[in-house]
Each structure stands twice: as structure tokens, then as C-alpha cells.
Length: 464
Image 1 (cartoon, rainbow, N blue to C red):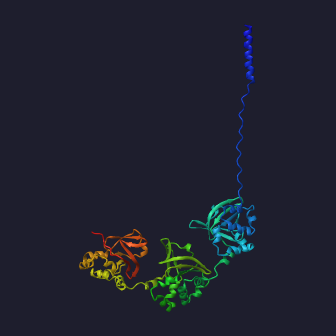
Image 2 (cartoon, rainbow, N blue to C red):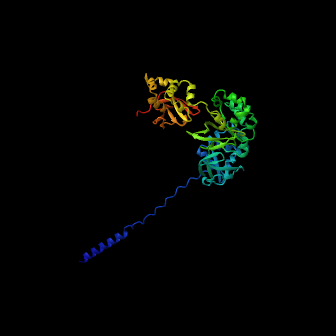
Image 3 (cartoon, one colour):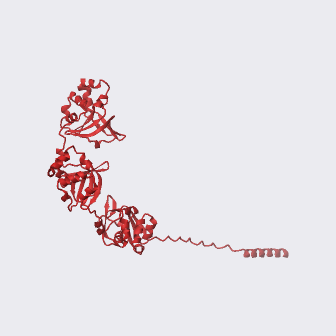
């Protein structure tokens, strides 16, 4: 029994010692907090421009002018940075001339693109003026919702650098002294002579004794018809005008001139402006093209020392002259005089429509040629003329619209009711205007009571 008690005691002691000898459960090891990667150091204005890759000319100019250290300094600065394309748009040789004398004009031009302080895009308001590091002011404006600095558009904003901000512009801006030096040296008349293509206009201005006026201080805005525009006038018109330059010619020329310098961006659809002749011209936008009265403006913003020239493709006439130039013959008389419409005239006469189509109107007539009538099946014309009050009248009236519809108003898919009562449909096929299945081969032959368009086929109203 004693032996059993001793063994039990020894076993218990062994277990106690084993438990005491067991390693203690380790405390949880603390995981070190992740170390944030250091933010990359922001580049200064010069480094940012170099890294962007589209300001190579600007960077070269800044370096040549010794301004790299200044623009890499503490600042802050606001830089309006012209792109390489903006510098490339300068007249040939300008950049080379500036780089050849960097301490002169180049430095002044560059400093004119820099403001002191950090000016973000949201701070720019229409009409705001701010002094540049060059010392002259720049003016901000909002044109058609787009921010501008002087005449340059701000195309990208708020490119931040360690010492300021860069805004990208699409043109090089010039301080007032440089801008004045860069102004064209030739006046409006000299510019027209040098340009070529305006020989008739220059001859007319000379004959009307307007050279001195249009070479004066101004500024003026001239809508200059090309030689082709004058050549498109009825035969003998130019000779007649030049023979009496103090009369109609002077009035017509002054009708092409506005007081003040009106750039293309100021032209809006429906704008009316008084000319030096005293009557108004009206601007419009037709199919995206700017028009003045009925002439298309084909080139804009040719600057001269005393104004600006816009080129137009037609001579425009003041109201009194336009009225005097209106055709004297009505639609029927015009068709008879033109020739090539003998069958049509005979049909109109047989159907007793001469008086109607000689009336006040206005009318728009789609006139089939003699060849178009000849292409009808044999005997058709004779049958129609034999019963002119029937089908013939309906067919003829199907070629006539109420109102004066010029070619520019014709659009693909347009449907218009004729005097016969049924509709005709216009279409544009391979670039050619069509009415129903006939091609319109000549347009806008004006008469005193409307307009004639020539077609190559007779069109017929739908069967009743």
C-alpha cells in the first residue's frame, strides 16, 4: 500500500514538472504598419513643359532668353504656353529672328505669357484684365463659351507644377508694342492690289475716286468681290458703270464697305449692318457657309493696316440698284427670248395660261426643253395640244410652284405642292438636283415675276 502511494505521488510530481517545463504560449507578434511610398516630387514649370513634349519651341525660346532659372524658381507663376503648332503659325522666319536676338523682343514676348501668382481656370472671367511679368496687360474673354486670352484660345487648363500652373493656348500673343510692330504695313487698297484677283475692283475704286478714302485711317471692313464675281455680271454692266463712276458705281462700291473692323467671328445669322452707302446688308449662315445678302463669303480676315478684307463670290447691290437691275421680262417673255422652249411656249399658249404666267406671281417654273418634249412617245404632244383644257393644262400646272423658289432652297427629300394640286419631290442624286425623275440642268433664271429652272424631262402628275 505504501508502495502504491509513493508511485502515485511520483507520477503526480512528474506531471506537474512537465507542465511547468512546457513553453509558454507566445504573445501575438505586432505587425509593423505599412510604410507609405513617398509621393513623387512635383516638377516645376520648365520641367513640366519639357516632359509634356509639345512645347519644344517654347522651351528652346525660354532657354535662349535665359529665363529657365526664373521659371524654375519659387514663384508661383501662371504660364500661358503656346504649343509648337502655335509658334509654327507665325510668319516664316519669325522664330529664327527672335532666337537670334533673345535679349530683345523674345524676352518681352515670353514674359508677356507669364503672370505672377497661381491663377486657376475658375478665376478667369469675361473682361478680366491682368498685368503680366512683361508689364503690359492681357485681357480675358469668353467667346462662344470658350475662354480666350487676347486673341488666343485657352485649349487646356490647370496643368499644375510645383511652382505654379500652366494653361495651354493655341497662338502666340504679343505685347502691345510688338503687336503694333507686327501689324500689316499695307492699307486696304494696297493689300487688294498685292493679293491679285481683284483687278476689276481696284479699277472700279480708282475710277470712282475712292482710293484715298479707302487708304485713310479707317478702320474699314471691305467685302471684296473677285474678278470672277464682276465677270458674272450681265454683259456690258462693268463698262457702263465705269463710264459713269460718280453715279451707280460709287453707290455699289460703298455698299461693300462697313465702318469699323468687323472680323469673321463677329458675323451672326440674321445680323444687319449699315454700309457706307447708307443701306443695310444682312448676314446669314446657309449650309454652314457665311453669306452677305446673296453672296458667299469665301475668304475671311485678310488684315490691312486700316481694316480688314473679306472675299465674296458675287457683287452685291444696294436696294435701289438691285431693283433697277431686276429683269424686265416676265416668265413667258423670258422663255420666248431664251430659245429652246418653243414647245413649252406653244403648250402654254394653247392651254390659255399665258396671262396667268405673265401675272404678278411670283411663280417658279420648271421648264422642260424642246428636247424633253421631243422625248415623249410619238403623237403625245399632238394629242395634248388637241385637248388643251384637259391633260395638257394639268401637266403644265404640275411644272409650276407658287412663290419664288431659288436653287439654294432645294433640299433632298423636299416635297412641295404645285399649282396643279399634287406634290413634286426633290432629290439630290450623284450631286445633281432632281425633281421627280427629271434632272434640273440650269437654275435661277430670274424673270420679273419669278424664276425659271430648266429640266431635261416632262414630269406628269399622279393619275387621279
